[in-house]
Length: 284
Ligand SMILES: [Zn+2]
Image (cartoon, rainbow, N blue to C red; front, side, top):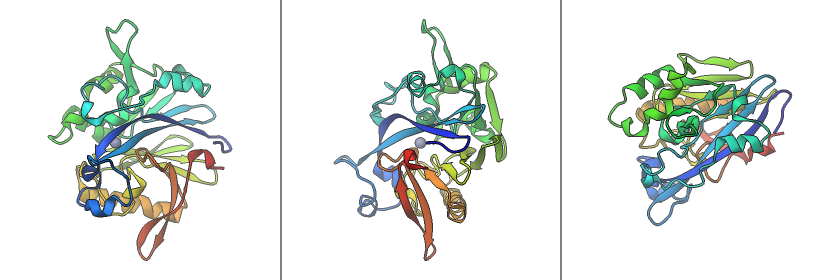
């Protein structure tokens, strides 16, 4: 897809299975199963839809999926279809060396795994994108280094410490522009210091909603995942994100929804509802 100066591509980095009850928290299955399918074991398919943002002088990635490094350890999640980012970039006409920035929404295993890789003789783990700055929320980084009981299992040091060691880590303390076309805003409900990129496409803005709204079905304010660290903050996050999206007619791009890529939203009788659903490629 193209605008005046920004080109967007998705990289479908694989999929995993997550328990529907965990994804929808206190919402009864009787209600959520009408909005998102699950199998007989109650597992839902979640994608890891990552984004490539090409601007005039930057090649940016948003999130990198699980990668391969911990797949055996993460058996429970039945991860499938994991792609090699270096190959995917070549298919799009780019290379890993050309990536200037990697924005990591947060550091849970399904968002930053391909940020690092084994070197050729498998003796060391190194940044996959050797010339890129890696952008992470400052409080997310502190949480990663000193995790709480809930999130400790979701963080793998080898996904990030080689980046810090290479001097490529850039911490974001407040909402800020990373390039003239890309602003990151901070949300704290799912996990502290989650970065949400807002990408300026000229006449519209695309919001990579990450785990603030993991699925289109998670649009209602109270439909908060049981994985969220601060559920009330999650609801406030969603209200802030969605009221802005309605007012400014922003496009939401879902990272985890296996069935829906993008939508716009409207507010009807005080409730946020989907307006239009479409694919990233359809943004004109
Ligand atoms: Zn996630």
